[in-house]
Length: 503
Ligand SMILES: *[C@@H]1O[C@H](CO)[C@@H](O)[C@H](O)[C@H]1NC(C)=O
Ligand SMILES: *[C@@H]1O[C@H](CO)[C@@H](O)[C@H](O)[C@H]1NC(C)=O
Ligand SMILES: *[C@@H]1O[C@H](CO)[C@@H](O)[C@H](O)[C@H]1NC(C)=O
Image 1 (cartoon, protein in one colour):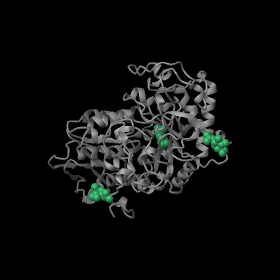
Image 2: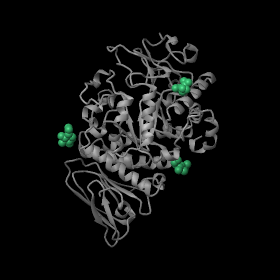
Image 3: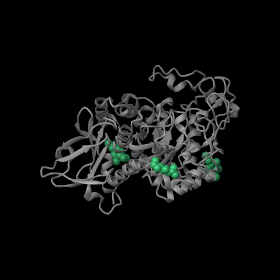
């Protein structure tokens, strides 16, 4: 029951929503490139770039919807066409000295019918949505339906503090999840959290709970003109919830299924249009995370995505997010980081870049959430430019032929330290030459035959990260030199004429 198959039923579902604008279909989402925002940590209303924010203290730092609205140029100029923002509803207020810190990330809901006033007003959020749409960009919002949040000791929850679900009957009995068996049903019926912060687990299988959620999501999507949803903790909710929830929302949903096993994660796409590609996250981390990384597993993984994903064009591909160590903390090698970013944006699926990657932020799931304003929103560094160039070439290939997104990437050439990835066809293919040798490696020259690249004899191709043009020889082979372990990205020169790529 993917959204693509449900198009006809959407107008009926939304018939009552007067202010609803056109929703973005799954088909359209496959062409987007997404920038992930933690609203509290992106930009402040006053535009200040010096306001202190100690990420390790896990407190609110003062980012807001209005601050974000004012900084959309910074995001759009990197080639992104959509943003995913952290959860928007009112969360529990936690004393600043509490063990897990405050709910600045938004995942501890208390009142689902109210907007979190730490980030601004409902009107501020509407303005953000409008500002995005005015630019031809789209809004994805993070949605938590699995649990509420409560500051306290396991089972001591005062349910009357919640709106909605203000009674214990809406919740599973208290038990903490045992993560040792992800296939066990306790993953869905026991509680996330611990004895410091309780995350009471909602009985999403019950009809009365579902009707509240479905009514709520229809209103939220309509009131704020939301284009897509990221579903938090999707594996902690019974599978049968997801399809009717997506149908009620009437927009593309992409689930967080935090599990590296494709046989566990990919089937969620039978229930919802998209799934975050956690299997690929682990494969790419182990491939580009060190100069002795595992390219064999990555190559197998690319084949598995091709053969096992329900629809690889609608997977979300990422190398960082708010829950994982940032890549520069896995390896400080700049060449490996550049290769991992190129792979993330140019493989199959919808690329998702976490705020701060463009500033080479490091850290873990707490310290890695440093405020972006502290970078001064600097657009001159190599990371910002790299991401901009990669998004730009992907956007161009999609503009030249939307079948670029459904074409499944494959590896026509591999050796012990190099992979060549090809995506697209008929003169609209992007050829990525990716390496794990690291920044201190000697130059390496390869001749890529026309059966590898699909380029023709005597064809001009541009390496879009250096803007150098080269020409294939009379047999169609392309000579390429990997320098300092950096990625190379080739595209036919004729396809960029008239654009501002390498102009
Ligand atoms: C996968 O999704 C894309 C984008 O919506 C669509 O164009 C394509 O037909 C789908 N492929 C399959 C096999 O369903
Ligand atoms: C949506 O807007 C309507 C009309 O202003 C309001 O009554 C309703 O509570 C809003 N719903 C949500 C979930 O924000
Ligand atoms: C922005 O980054 C560049 C490259 O790292 C650096 O040279 C420049 O000084 C920075 N500008 C500001 C205002 O910090």
